[in-house]
Amino acid sequence: MKRLALIAAAMLSASALSASELNTISAGDIKISKIDIPAPVLQPVEAAKCNHVTVEITSKLYLMPQTSKSLLFTYAKNEAEFKEFTALWTPILNKFGMKVTGTEYKNEFGILNYESPEGLVVRDFLAEDMNYDALSSTTIVKLQHELLEPLEQAGMTPIAALNIKNEVFRPTFKLYYLTKPDANMDHEVQLRQLKNGEDIDFDLLANSVKLVKKDASFSMVYIGKLLGFKSKLATDTAAAAVSLENYKKFLAENKKEFIASKVLKLDEPFTSGDHTFNYLLNMYFFQ
Image (tube, rainbow, N blue to C red; front, side, top):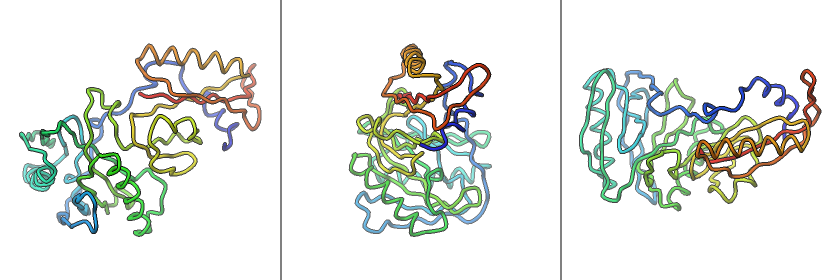
């Protein structure tokens, strides 16, 4: 547990319970930066169990798609760039049994639709927010394999690994793999990262998701549905119990699944106005 008293002070600025606490940014809200230099080169993967494709991205970031529903989408400044995108990704999809059903390009936004005979969808994971030595290519390669192998073991076939060497990102990679879709993408079994800014209670999550890598005390990569986390200050354990019941009710009203909770004693009491807080309540749930 690290500096809980300082965290308590920061938490006082948080808003009261509301549905907006659970809102997440959709893929469509994110626009990739675009820089124009040489095209990436397709390279075979050495000793790859799943035979996925490796691509090096240097500056043509429009070749690095985002995923949603049964489609890949990108931001390309003209149709020539979008055609380059479709020329790269159509054979990758075909290689893994996906059939391209159509493309659309308008106002620098390109979509590639596909369908899968097995009803699968492509999803992605960017490793940039993980904790690793970005100056060590050996470390990055090792980390990539530490994520690819669990995907294979879970039957979530990796189809592509993009090694990113661009000033917009620190040296990193992005993985693309197959999984089963859900009408609510938060409920899909995906490769995800939980990074709250505070130490994670790993023991509380052991039976709810598959831990892939304990990235740091405050970060973990896992396979499963989208995890949610909320902390609340409490003057005593009784107040923490009341907060827990209220939040459980809030989650139920918003159709979120409660997982577990833990009450932690602050390293030092924290006083604000007439209240002295001695405890921190951590709660975990599925979005």
